Length: 411
Ligand SMILES: Cc1cc2nc3c(=O)[nH]c(=O)nc-3n(C[C@H](O)[C@H](O)[C@H](O)COP(=O)(O)OP(=O)(O)OC[C@H]3O[C@@H](n4cnc5c(N)ncnc54)[C@H](O)[C@@H]3O)c2cc1C
Image (cartoon, rainbow, N blue to C red; front, side, top):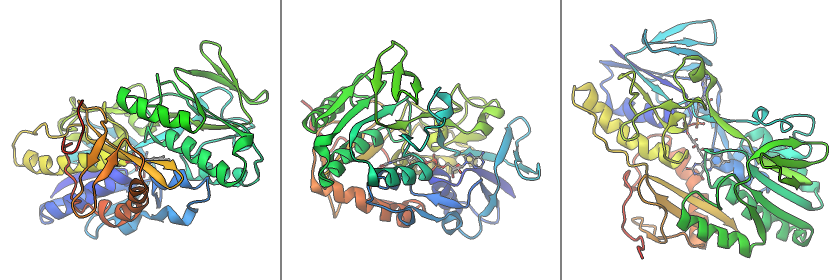
């Protein structure tokens, strides 16, 4: 039997396990997947929890429900990978798992301890994250009784997973405080290391204009050096100081410690792989998918989905002795919730920045690109059902894995 080992049963790992379980001959292949936690979180839903739109129950399901019978699931942390010996050491019991092929899908997580002052006595008192279930729930509780002041949303460093989530947060905050009758008592400030609202110029202009209309002040190129939790101040490397009453942070994102311990990561613990095929340049039987991969693409569930589509087909060629085809183009698409029951959609890849236009979707679409619409808001909400029922199970969606220019407006 040949052994395929998948590390991480999050979005990418679960999708790839389902897809390859269907495609590989069970008489020849044994697939094993390892994860450290029993619960699978629908991470895009964490955004809605602080504003009372979703509860914890709306975003959690048992991980095992999504792993097909026939795939071995091991609940354990991964201690380290020994690629020279084609084996992985588990954290529990020091057991080793051998592999013929390895897929690393251990994602990325927040590291507030990397910023002095952030993760100290004011953590979950006046400083919150919304990238974890604990942070989102603590912030929801805090917002229920907060009577206004200056809310600063700070992105410490890029890359972060779901680069549009901070924008969505600040736009939903604008809506939420309007609903609460508090908007005139709340000042909203968005401090970001980026030169504008988003990485790419056209989207940055569209999104920046929307933030301006919503009276959200952007402070670009703000690179936080430390937080003074007692004086409630953010201090940047160039000594700008921003006071806050409530700080919502997107801390430094980093890949798994296990990757670092194995000497397989870059400075942020992401695994360098070929940007079109996901294969490691050093170990030809090792791949990295999803947020764990060091790619110039967005770290997003949609990217993991398109990546798995490309990878699964390529993997079948590879094990038959054919070369990997450079099929993945960095395709990402994300709904951006903008408050008041509206949203935008962006669709882009390595070479093409997000453009305005229409995104065709058979039987449902078109969705408006880079323009607010109610339909996009419903698309965003519908996505949760699609995630649990179609995507995680590795079923096909009528969305091309490679980006299409259909509907995009080029000036
Ligand atoms: C607030 C928020 C909003 C988002 N919104 C969107 C959105 O609207 N659209 C979108 O496309 N994406 C969105 N995302 C991003 C999306 O959720 C992630 O990009 C996606 O889940 C990445 O999948 P992954 O499999 O790479 O990582 P994950 O799904 O995070 O899975 C990684 C898995 O690896 C496991 N693991 C890690 N280390 C170890 C170890 N040492 N041992 C064992 N197991 C380990 C973890 O337990 C986890 O289950 C959002 C994320 C957040 C936080």
